[in-house]
Every structure is written in structure tokens, then in C-alpha cells.
Image (cartoon, rainbow, N blue to C red; front, top):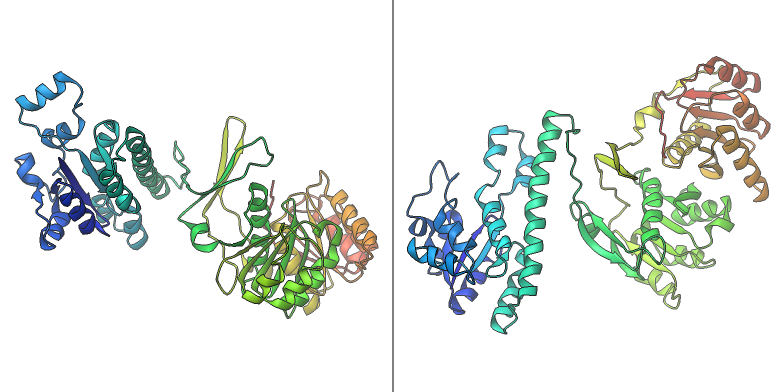
Length: 510
């Protein structure tokens, strides 16, 4: 039996090779892997002894050879194949262990195109694909986490076709992801990120119990191990719907940097937000916006969930809490609550992945775009359109309202007063309807909007929204501007003594 080991990530490669030797495998290796194995006492054979050719062209050609691919690919159950192998002196290779040149690490540390090109693996993917194709006869190993499993299976008679088939699938996933990464990089470098093909590759973090509904299967896939690294389950299990709600809540709460922000979300829409001196104060004021919708909702805490805040949240039923960090005392507060789910990022503040691109499935395909975000300069450099300027406190409320509006379903308007959201209208077909619906909801909750700041994620097409805001007592408004009737909107603001600012940037979220 022979095993070919050629790995870029050499973690545990020596131990794996020695275990294979103990099982009777002859080890073939290449380049740096061969040197490492020899230095550590493995009786490895250099690849050139098998291929009968030296490594050529600075290592570009070393395994692309019939003695390698013939040894991997010939079918042991096919007499013509075995006869051909004997006639040409091709010995079987029964196990291929390969992981590929570190292309991702290369592009993260250099922009030197020559170096990037040299870190595109050719022989490695070819060997992996060959071994995967012939999985009936050959074990293919591409994941260092599988080393121990492979050895255990070989020792205990577990080298079944089903096991090799599972490794085959992982191998093709490995090479597909590698090729997709290269293609996406080249399109990003030369085609602005929008080539003729777009590849979206995620690794499965876990399966959810079901999708949006019980009859649908679902799972969470992640980019760059984001959730594996930044999402720790402390209690319960996150569902498909939980994850979309958590995404909405964390995006809003985390957009305020290190500030003590708390966001409450229901069905992916914010129903409460506040930014006070402490997280406890923020939660209390966020809950006031819509305590009815908050029942069974998701609470995102941009900081540490401590015992005092946990006790306050525990006064009503919320389904999910996600916090930057959670103290043991806070976790004990919910010990006897079977339905609540608690997650932590184990950091000081909530973090976002910083995905550069965004996409959405539509029937028959998907639309793909650069990710949207609110640049702080949009607010700081917003131009005053009205005669009246916003007071310092009002401008802070405008900033909060604008960020929440930008991350909420269009059409959307957000009312903020004293650093707490007091009303919100979202997902409406008309912007004036969104403004009016928010006012009616605030009235139902017994909240006073007078003196509030208002933000819209897109321009107001008519002055009617300004008139509605004025009737509710709004004192300051921020919006992108850009309507053909901006002059009418500005005039309305001046008539009502409202401070009006334009940012020049629209933030539709559909």
C-alpha cells in the first residue's frame, strides 16, 4: 500500500504519516512536505523517484505525471486497468493526502500579482480530483481534522466505500471552494467584482431544526468561519428564523461602535432601540417603544449582559438574547427558562463580519451587489437645508434615527427622542403611510413624539410627510434628499420651524 502526502498546511502531517507507516503504508511525498517528514524520521520516498523526473519549472510541475495519476486513477477491479498499470510499471497509490497552496493567505498579505499567481496550486487540485474520482479504490484526505478518523477507520476495518464516498464529497467541496476563491479574486481585481460568473461559497456551521416553517429543511452557512469564531451558544438552539432576526438586531446595535446600544427586533424589524449611559437604561427605554411586539422577540446587547440586565429582561418573555458577552450570574437568571435562547460573541462589543458583497435569492437566480453601510461622514457632513439648525441633542437623535432607518425595511421612517426610538414605520408601500403608522403606534403605546427627531432612509417625495411629522411635534428631520420636490419639502420644514438635513445617500433595504 502507498500513500501520497503533499500538504501546504503541515499541521499533524508527521503524526499522520507515522501512523500510516505503522499500518504498512509506504509514504511518497513532495518538496517541503518530504523534507519535513524525512527530518522527523519518516521513511518517505521523494516524488521524483516515482515520476522519474525532477521537479521542474520552480516546482510548477512535479506531480503531473502518469506514474502519479495512473497510480491514483486506475481501477483495481478492471482487468484492463490493472494490466495497463503492470505493463507501464505503474504502482497503485491508495491514499492521497493533500491541501492546497494558501491562496487566501497570499491575497490577504500581498498585492504582488506575480506572487499571487505562483500561489495558485495546479498539481494539488489535480491529485485531489483524481483520488476523489477513484474513491472506490482510493482514500482522499483534504481536511487535517480527518487524520485521526482515517487512522481509526483503517485500524478497525472501517474503510468502507461509504466512508470513502464521504471523503470524496469533501474533496470536491475543497477544490470547488479553491477554484471559486481564485475566480472571485480575479473578477474583483479585473472586473470590479462583477464577472460573468459569481461564486458564493459558505461552510456549514450547523443544521437548523427546520427552515422558516417546519416542512422546510434549513442550515446556517458561514463565510470565513465567522459564526464558528464569533457566535457561542450558551443556552438553546438558534433556528433559521432566529438567525435572520439576530442578524437584523446585531447589525443595528453594532453600528454604534462601543456605545451602550440595545436593539429589540421582531420578525427582522426593530421594535425598540435606545442608546443611554448604561445597557440597563438602554434596554428599559428600548422596551418602551413597543413592549407588545417585543414579547417573543430578539434582544441584541452591545456589551456585557450582567445579572441586573438579565433580571430586567426576564420580566417578559423574549425568545433570544445575543450579547457581546454574558456573565455566569446573568446566565443563571434564565436557568429555569426552557424556551429562551442565549448567545454570545465573547467580545467586548458586538462585531460584524464586514462582508463586502450582499445578495438575495429571486426565482431563477439571485441579485448581487456591494454591501451597504452607513458612513459616519454622511451624518457629520449632512447639509442643513432649513433656516433652523438642530440643537446638539437633536442632532444626536438624528444620527440614531438615521442609522436605524438605514438598516430597516423600506419604506421606513424612524422617530427618536432623548436617544431612544419612540416610533417606527417600516415596510410600507407609501412613505407618508409609514410616517402616519408610526405616529399611530406611538399613540397606542402612550409615547409622546413631541420634540423627536425623524429619519427617512430615502427622500420624501412630497411635503405631506413633513406636515404629518410637524403635527406630531417633530423638531428635526434627516433624509437623503434628491426629490424633484425638495424645494417644497424644505419650504414645509421652514413653515413648521423644523431643522432639516440632507445626506445625499439613499439606503433602501428591500
